[in-house]
Every structure is written in structure tokens, then in C-alpha cells.
Image (cartoon, rainbow, N blue to C red; front, side, top):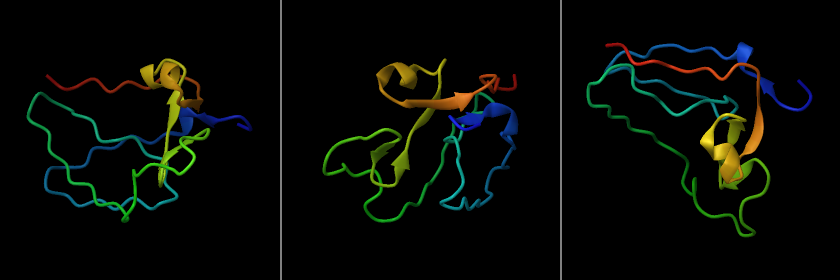
Length: 97
């Protein structure tokens, strides 16, 4: 939409253990999440300077260098200043038992 992104267009997929995955800088993505109760480990490589403070502090969707933060209105981050730009159903992933 003109004001945000509709959650119905999101694609969720499982990445098996030991798989390397590249996400392009133009890809909106959510941090990895657990699918069962096993320990969870991830390695994320980012360009130098990513997640360092901005000279003038956070502004709108840009929170740190190379870090954009968009939230659904039901996400706790929305009450902490994240830009509420995700519309539609709030997708939840339920870990497998």
C-alpha cells in the first residue's frame, strides 16, 4: 500500500540447519526465529559500520546505520518508536513440538 507493506505479501520459509542463505540489501526481512525447542544459533555478516549510531539519532524507519525498523501495530517495538508500516494480519510462527 502507499502507507506501508501488507503482510499478505510476506513469504515464510524454512532454512535447514547448516544452510548458507544470502539476503540482498533490498530484501525486507525478519530476524530468524526458532521452529522448535532446540538451541538456536545464527551467524550474520553485515557491512562494516552496520548497527552503529547515526550522527543525529534515529529518524523514522532508519534506526542505526544500515538498520531499518518497521513494525506491525501489534509488535511491542511499535510502542517504542518503531515505524508502524506493516499492515494486515500479524503473522505468527508457532514452534513445532
